[in-house]
Length: 330
Ligand code: PBG
Ligand code: ZN
Image 1 (tube, rainbow, N blue to C red):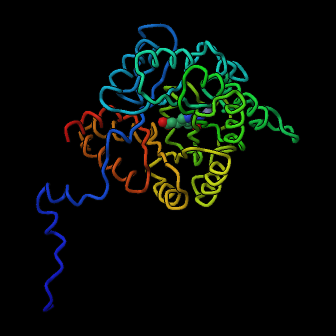
Image 2: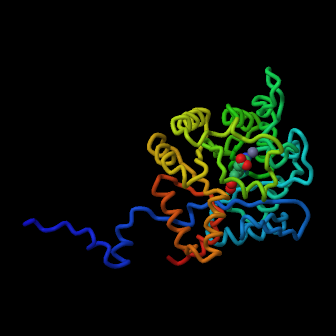
């Protein structure tokens, strides 16, 4: 050798040294907490496949939001579970809809919480698909893109009126961002932002979500509109289109199996990137931890750090509150 040996271990010797040179920092300010709101009062329905997650009525959701805001979590993402479903999901654009009620009630108590709404139809349609289903010219049932876009316009305007700061379309309809931007601007909601679920893959990891949101498709699946997990270039085309159409933020979903996509989106486009650590990713850690096979806190912090290291600015996660508690004072 002769030369002084390169010793990288010198800077790993103590925690203060490691902290000083840490490249990626997870912060409570990076998190968005998804919440599931349903009708009536005093409701707290736990979901077996997602321990720690529950459907809640508006009063309980408001209490939760007060807590989350006090912990420093900047934003929540609202999903609605309606009392009544129909073929078009018409409850999504009712000003008395469950999400609209929740928005007004939360805003009264939490002035500074960023209110994000999931914009889709699958929790509201009796068939469980993400829009209007019709037959194509070959007589096959399919998601009718353009009819669904018309309903999307009504849904986002209703969310904006009720107090949404950001609308997050998750239907994977072509042209959804442009349509939403036009609808919002036309009604004077030019300051309501769009977080597009741009690269949303047809993933098996959404299973537990469909239990809590009661949104499983009653026939077929979503492979006709969500991305094929094998396709990275196509995911980048989706993002490029959404950026052109006026998205303020883009999302990659799920997170862990798609870190390469997060990294490519971050390096190609100069706008904030969100990653959704989805229900199945949550359930896997919970189940292993419950069996004593993994250390929950260490796994969650490592996973979130990896998602950020790949390039995500914001992480949507069911662990948001736990993370905020773990990071408190650090
Ligand atoms: C559908 C939607 C899905 C999720 C959020 N909105 C997936 C789906 O059912 O296709 C998944 C979130 C999760 O798994 O945590 N619009
Ligand atoms: Zn949907």
